[in-house]
Image: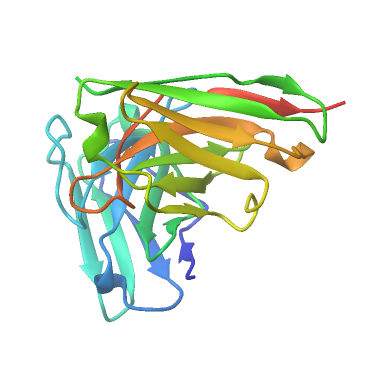
Length: 109
Length: 120
């Protein structure tokens, strides 16, 4: 199995852009889809990006996902930050098992 | 709309057993892989187990292998997790989650979770 490594926390001001990385420890990041989940305090996770870079209906286009094979990582970018974006964000991929990143706490201040 | 409602959580002593249930609605349950995912207090998400749409294939995290059993009843639109030999480190909110149509090991919908506390 592989691991997915995320920064523990990031912070940025309202209106700015933030990028959260998710680095795969072994095997190619491009070999299996990556998804991103948002979890607000006291709530269940919800999907903000699926299949590397697709947005579910209802998720603002301020959210985008990408894959970078050179760094073997996936990224979640949130532009035009709003205070409501403050949450924990998790990446997830798989091989024969389901693998989550450790989560990144986004603070919008 | 897709709904996943977990039940069966509670307080149990170390070494005890508990059975979680998840009632699914709003989609054709028998078409989808289903998973259990847990989150210890203040910690991140940890995958526990998944089961294929017809129950022909199951997989477990090493941390629960041999102690937990996942099952489903497609006629009742229900997912289950039988948890035996429970340990303090199994204390967590347990989420029922649906796999996507593209890959059963990707998640698109989550339940609200049920809390399992293992303590004497």
